[in-house]
Image 1: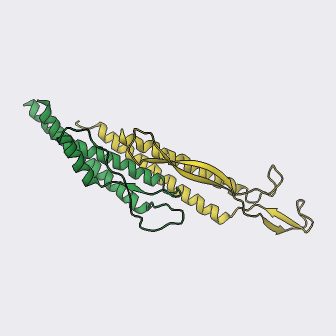
Image 2: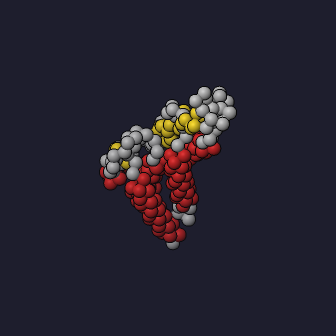
Image 3: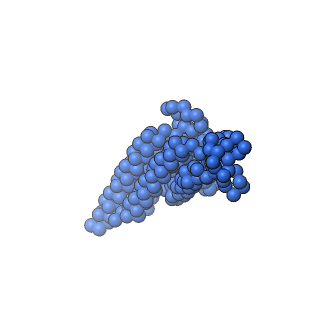
Length: 137
Length: 118
């Protein structure tokens, strides 16, 4: 049934966008985390989206979204001069996380808009299916 | 006896099936608005409906519509060709047309029921 595919497609997008929002929240929360469990500064994380084809019996060309992986941003940590800090090196620099707060805010807004769009899509499909159920009455 | 009834409703049934398929494709485009290298897809509704009609007339099984890539309106750095405004517009348009096909089919059924009662 074709219209039911909308639910699986839109819900895959909802799952992917909410994971993106989670990762953004983690980055923002740790924007000042100087020491993570491995002793180095927190590294920003990004999700990688990829298109996931639906079942063979579905409509041709219909693809959902899946999170292919979460990568750590490999850009160098920011060095901040703060000699009084307990984690400062010999020159007095502290390695701060490479989180770009502006980028993360943009990511958050984009994820939230995409989430809303997909909720709208699901609601529309639900309305259409309910109207189809009352066909001929 | 059943065949003329079936034939009468065939056009709207085909239209409804194709509208549902197009709705799914547009939903997939909206879902993949942030996926790198995803290319927006759609099909030519008029062409798909006329080929579904001719397939139904000749009694052959209905063919899947030919899914094509949409011509991108703006280039994007990540290779994604989904234009969210266009997709949302097409989605709303398709929704109304689906409802219209549903309404006409419902009216046809009501007409036949009225004829049965007298």
